[in-house]
Length: 281
Ligand code: FDA
Image (cartoon, rainbow, N blue to C red; front, side):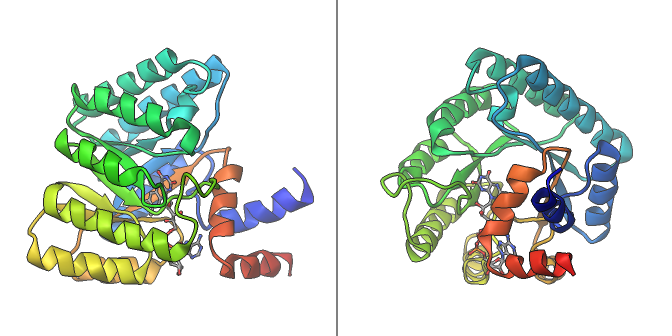
């Protein structure tokens, strides 16, 4: 491991539950003890080797079993490219199907994360097909994507469960709204669509303004929803929301492949540069 990666790992431990399944389950229990649900993600993306994709699938099946046997209140969230979407779409579909079947058997929900724009269309198609057989699956939709309003309209029409997030991948401006203001405005507008026509959705943000807006909407529209936040971010606010009676889950990633995920978290907020500097001392 290079010096730079070693430093990043020291900082990354605040965003990940550890590198193995036992640490993930222990962290999920910690989240549950604070009144949070747990959304567990086995880190990995852009897999092209079918053996690795199979290993990721096995890990999720094991994880779903461990969630059930340990009595954790939670479920898994997966990325289609970790099942080989880019190189073998049929294989990725089959792997996701087996995880959806296991979720159903264990009475767990299942989220599908949304990744870079190269896989958006396929992810939506595969998700929609899966939804026709498994009602407990949900999909993340990114407010920074210009196409998301149209996608949301269609998805709501088919009874999809949606987790709304801002979006975390670097994308060209013909695909995404380039400014933070426009992304927030679109988030706000998509969130209203969810409160008007969605059910069992998740509001995935740490942005106080948007969270306050969601609280106001929740007062007037009585629909089932929950907040979802990432491990290691806005921990006090999580407690406050649960204290006010809202349902909230923590997204808990774990595994050896912590690098890409942690880099996205690091670059999201200027204060994290300070964390890196402090880890040097
Ligand atoms: P914003 O970035 O504006 O942050 C609002 C405030 O939160 C900041 O002012 C700061 O206080 C705090 N904060 C946010 N990020 C921080 C950080 N890294 N370090 C320190 N403080 C930070 N993305 C995606 O493309 N596909 C997906 O499937 C998912 N899935 C997902 C699940 C869940 C449960 C969440 C919460 C988020 C995602 N994301 C995601 C990530 C999402 O797109 C986005 O990158 C982050 O949530 C950060 O955006 P915010 O909405 O929090 O706003």
